[in-house]
Image 1 (cartoon, helix red, strand yellow):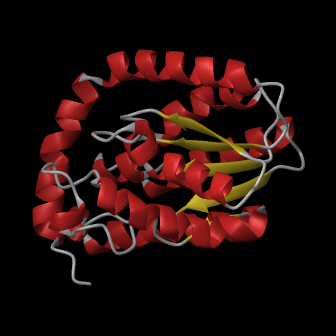
Image 2 (cartoon, one colour; image 1 turned 180 degrees about the vertical axis):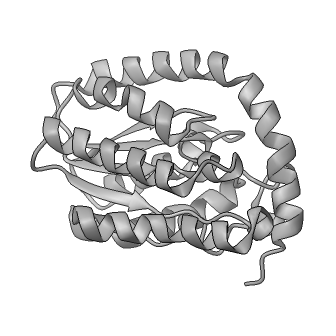
Length: 227
């Protein structure tokens, strides 16, 4: 698969401004949805939390078409007794994720925690060491509250427009954290989807329902062994 990073980055740069303008409203809406979902499931023990940005939140598609919703369907069809909680918020960075993760994970038991953050950091040119620090802090906080939780970290990549050195340093953040923190890793969440026009919405960033199906397959490959 050859990704046209120049074209993809240009679209990313334009869209990030639009996403940021709606972040506050989306956070409030997402927070209410998360709160309602958590309340309904807080007494149940086998919870899987998907904690991420607009990719996890399912920007532009129905909730049951986004990859966390598809994972829930797969779990149900195979008879697994797990509840998926979608805690994705559009526009989320690792810094803002760190500020709200305690609130999310304290509200119910958590069996598996899937961490999908960092993409917005890369698009904004945030120093990889800052992203690294925040992701490690999120993992530490989740483990502090739920010591036996299983964590799956979703890796991300950025186009080389910020410089090849930046892109490579950013890519290395995720496997380094996974190794140091002894958590499971999805090397690249958007494998076979990123840069594929027919699998993404017109903005070029967010997967279509068909794209989300492929993302769900990628996630399932790494999640199934944790069940």
